[in-house]
Length: 191
Image (cartoon, rainbow, N blue to C red; front, side):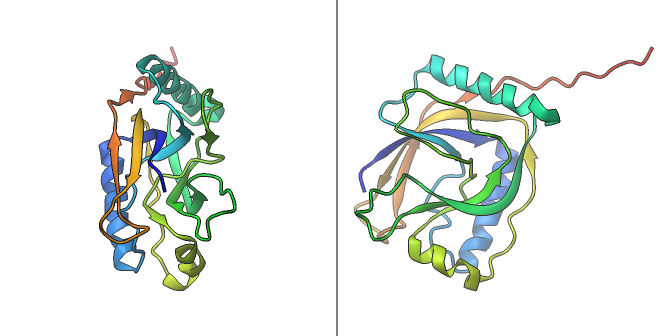
């Protein structure tokens, strides 16, 4: 596996703590890749990093989506699941998956991407095809339900390590994040 570039959504650190605690329970329940991917939601695989201006535009777009359909600026977790981290070419016997709670936020249309994820999943780990097949037998704990309003977008490079457990040992570098605009709650005074 070659290094990949992603554009990612990063939840506020308070939500990150909940996800970190969930990862510990997943690892204890027998999911070896619970620490193999950072606690972010990948939006797309890209060939070149987004510029600061592109990240700002993306952050504004995500904020706009988060207030549509009476969401109130919230991005909520849903049931857990998995997505292939990149569409398979059919050459690999084992396709890696990003595993974690899905987010209720639609992924916006993005330009200059190699692959846009069909859904957003907040990564609690990285699993192999074999792991995915044995998920039902692991009796994993339910993903915590939570929401966040504050979040950031950033570029990320994800690379396999030459040492460690094959399929589970990776390094990543997250670029300078750009915050989503603050959500302002407007109260009517009823005068």
